[in-house]
Image 1: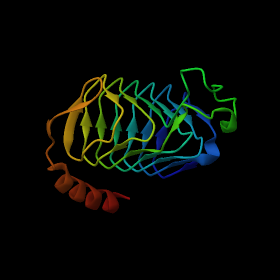
Image 2 (image 1 turned 135 degrees about the vertical axis):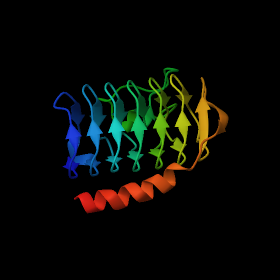
Image 3 (image 1 turned 90 degrees about the vertical axis):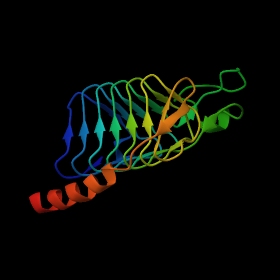
Image 4 (image 1 turned 180 degrees about the horizontal axis):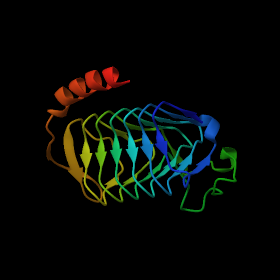
Length: 178
């Protein structure tokens, strides 16, 4: 695992495939999170994963900078066949999962905020500045600077971009602080 500067990572997390995991600077990962590297997990700088978050990176997961993930979120970049056409599970090689096997990289752009207990499916890109309400099911790409919630998610309104000015000021302050 490659870990940046000033990170706070609980000793109570579980890591699988750590060689495929990169974490940026000033990131915090709380108790009982699961990071399963798969083909790669990249977590940017100034990111927070609250307790009990699970990242299954079989097909890759990218969290850009300033992402906030509330407790009990679940990200899976691969999903087994539930119809019985394929063998299932992490111990089965892909060649034995020919049908119904869904895979795709998950990307969360800068300033994404995820409420508690959300589920994100394979192949989803969550645009910059998106806010997702608690207990939502994200099964499609989400437009930037929009607020979403529901099962499945639906747009509720627009999110302010005021934080972009604060980001600039914060990064100047942070670089002087180092």
